Length: 586
Image (tube, rainbow, N blue to C red; front, side, top):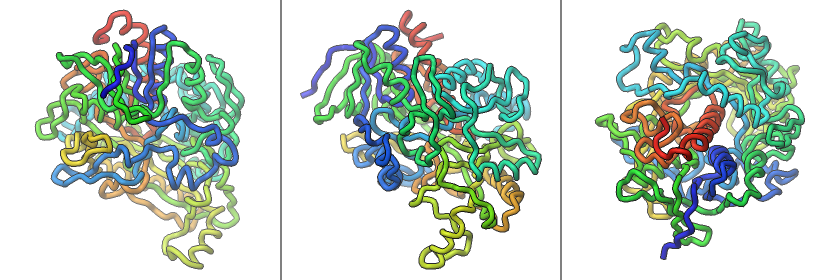
């Protein structure tokens, strides 16, 4: 028998970054909020030495990730194939528990390029309307970089982001990214300290006339206190950061930033181990009346609410919208419908540079967001007409810490096991650096999300089905960027530079990036988007879907920065506009 709870003003589904941002704003507005998190609370020992540096537990066994036995998705490359369930964590890693993926992330906090916010308009103006292929379904966000800039700045201030500005008010600043959009001010903390491998990459890139810079990261390079009084420690550079918690309180996470501000509020309640099954709609299908979830004891519970915030991982938001009948499912044959449309990913590759033995890199030192990067080959720096592709890539040497189980670089031709392999690992461990291209991904009519007609999860619901493959455009773009990685690698003077080309077909098995976008996208036209630019459902206005599902296409950068900026903007609009006049925010 279903349990019905006392009605609340708002229910927040998922308490990672986006859910915490929205919940904090609503609670401060004085309304009652219940947050439902499918995972449990994190134990304090998971964030303290020495337990927190357990590579076997957190990397190989994915202790901070969702349980696929309960909820997974099915995958196929094209619609003519039969999709099969993803049984093991592979291409991307979805977090579980209070704090969500914001607990295990590496901290890279980009602002996306101005082009990324309005690619269609800029392409049409530069190349004409017929330049974009018919099957490429990219579109503008409905909000520009300049409109989002104040919210980018808020993210950087609240999250103690360390970095160096390259463009303040249109003035280029030495040491930063000269290709970034105009900023209103400098970062609140100086950049993280570069590692030896980053310095090798920087020297090689500068010798080619390129513009490397240290990537901005939500990892404090010094002791810092934000406007809410949240204190950050200084990064220890201990190399166990992404996929791990932070013992020094240097990496921004919902657990150490926003959740402490909510913990003692009388109008906020967190219910962990509560997995939402669907959003309940009234008879008109135009208003949500609450959500149904399964609690820690396996009981079915109905939580009535006036406002529903979907703030799960982006794929989870799309799944719940499809299960709940919020919006019209996308039909790739006709192009009609918006839920499931424009799923996109990233196309990657790079080189591994094997330096001489007199170059000592100390690779075990590092941090999750520590990188030397360059945008010389990203979006508008490229002439798409001459190069034959649309998009671009960020090129970077990451210094995340060469952990003992996973980091075993050996040159091509080395045996895959045995004595010679062991000798090669020992010989090259201290003298090897990666240079990677993180390529963007345009959206296509053939790449989408829907409900699987065959497979169901542990709760009897149809699984989310992913239909996705890389397009020729992305492969050309990635291979062009990888060629630039090779140029930089050779400029180090290394005798061996091993190239990793772009994959010819997407494979969901090997890890690539946890940067899934699209499926319930934002825009200015309800016929082409699921959400307006406040991340509010066009079809059910008291539902907001706050996640990377909102991005109409992917970029050559990590998505957390723009996602957080959009979340802060949406939270402000809900508090100051929607609560005063419920309905579509104009």
